[in-house]
Amino acid sequence: MQRTLVLLKPDCVQRRLIGDVLSRFEAKGLHIVAMKLLQVTPELSKQHYAEHVEKPFYSSLEEFITSAPVVAIALEGLEVIRVVRDMLGATNGLQAAPGTLRGDYSSSRQMNLVHASDSEESAKRELDLYFDADEFCDYSLVLTPFMRADDE
Image (cartoon, rainbow, N blue to C red; front, top):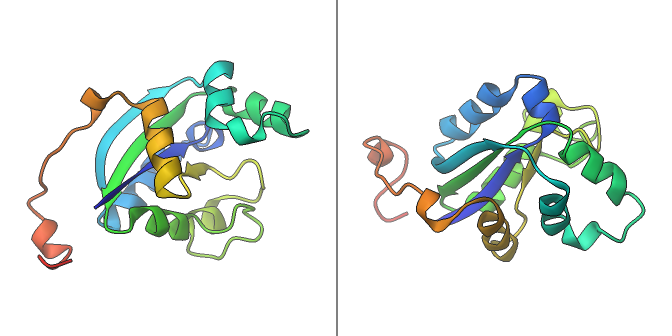
């Protein structure tokens, strides 16, 4: 079982797409183990996007991510990092395939609705930025046997 961080970005919140995006993750059988609405501060933005802080585009990235609340979500599931990134589609909404979240709802490179961790290392780092250990809820879904076999 893996965990990953998903951020529903300010454009997703402002466009009132939170429920649509969440329902896609739930329909896929992914397990929400933590979730909260928060305002990203410039300090949190610098931590989250540490690898981009010195790049020329960083100031517009920070301005965007701090412009409205985001929804931080910890998802759990088999190969969840790859599965979520496949569900999102290409970073640029204009290049994302139909059927993906960005392909269906985005037409921008920056306003692309959702961030998702790209590796186990970044998932751990990002989850630690947004959630304290006591904010994760470990629980069993009664429908799990109908979503995957016991040996998966």
